[in-house]
Image 1 (cartoon, rainbow, N blue to C red):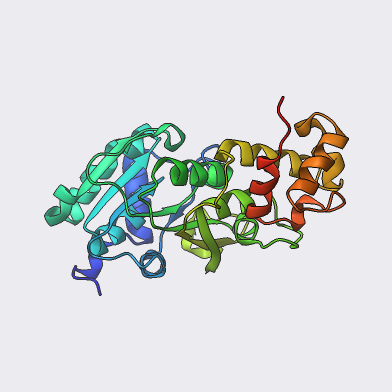
Image 2: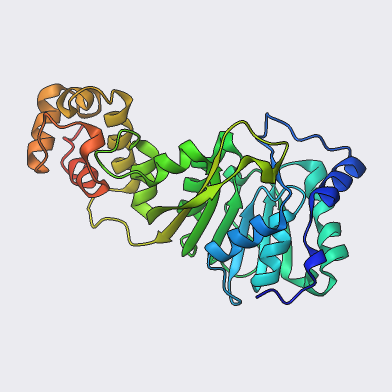
Length: 287
């Protein structure tokens, strides 16, 4: 339950007023769509299972809708914002609406893809409304860089949510699905309508929940496994014998690696689990 005044959170009028004062127009280039509904951000925080002891990292806080809801629930929130104007304004918004929590808030003015460290205790949760155009690379970068992140909830384009949560054999199962599975158990955690955003996007959004788990047990390095994944899906209609020929050095070498890994050379990438890709990477012939 929230311990703060319901007026603490930003509503549609607050968002537009803030944006006007800052001269901000959401840009397509950065995939900016600001959440204007307080009930939606509270729902995101609930679905993310944010706990009072959590240190949460948020990517792309924008004008601060979700940031404020996270500060209600968590011990500490660190927001990573690339936009100069938004990054400069956010601390003032927090101070105006939650003066008693300013010491629990930190801002990192940076491109999330370049962030390698964060101030304060290691983050235990990642909660974010990710810009559609960079959602998958940002998510994978954060999971790789901050192994302390146990739980993640991201709001992304519905199609991306489906892809991340897809299982082997599903037609949208692909590189994002396999790589996310390296780090975590992944599942769809709900849908978000268009009318809670300003401006309203022309696509639906979905929530994806990721619970950290140990990566597959393998002698191959993560980058080696991911190279096999990338090669398999670069020509996803081809059999793995053909798709992995360039990766292995030849179709014959690919076949040998597949057989050694216990995978049919006639299979396709979309049928394989991350554990099977790890096994294939283990048997890549020496260059």
